[in-house]
Length: 70
Image (tube, rainbow, N blue to C red; front, side, top):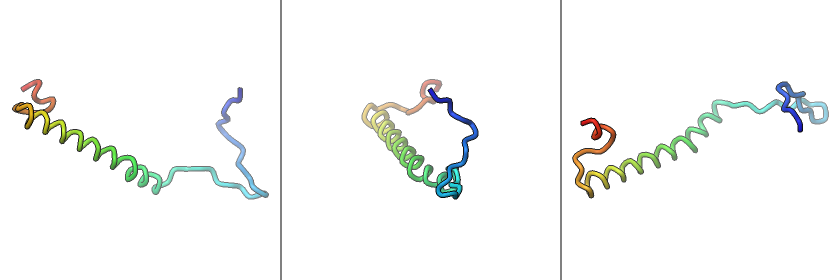
């Protein structure tokens, strides 16, 4: 079993050092756009559907955690 080295030797191709992978500002933007936005939209749709079922179909007076303490 091999132990992962904390400080690896730089990778070279024909004597040229290849830069290591790193996170950039563009990577953050891509994660927010392609992961964050779809998850947020799905959460909002689920919340809207849950509200409609609870308040409109079941006739509840309120919806959410506030109903437990109100």
